[in-house]
Image (cartoon, rainbow, N blue to C red; front, side, top):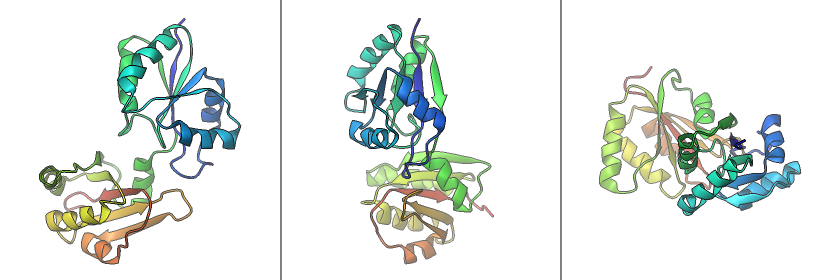
Length: 225
């Protein structure tokens, strides 16, 4: 009998944001494929999990996928972890899940935290319809093209951004989307120094101070109330 691939959601910051089921699965599978085994080890030590781990990331996924498929065929259950949140969401785990599905084997979701839905829930912006764009392109021309698409989008838009580019991104959003578009800039969600700046782009940018952390930006749709 083939093993199963468990897609396990883990905390995006606060280690207590994990389900009882996720801990149980992580203890019972044969191996855990982690985007970063060092970060996984912090979580494992906190919950007394001693399951073996194996690295699985964008640099080795083409080599790892056949190996993991073979282990599933041999009846081993495998858990898939990202650095934080739900695997496969803006994450290389998608290719493994695709390969397992193509091989006709079972994939099981063990849902947990997601920075996307966490940011939406506290943004104060419409959540009935939204799209997720991940990280904006790094090249200026492609970034401007994507922002022009967002300018005309009527749904709420969620993007990720790094601390190194967040101020530049906000400035470009001001120039392309205009000063009155409503946004929420969420930093360090679920962590000790969690912070959400909400309001018109112009006002948020005026009050913004670059700080360390991970950022999720929620952008109100065109003409959103």
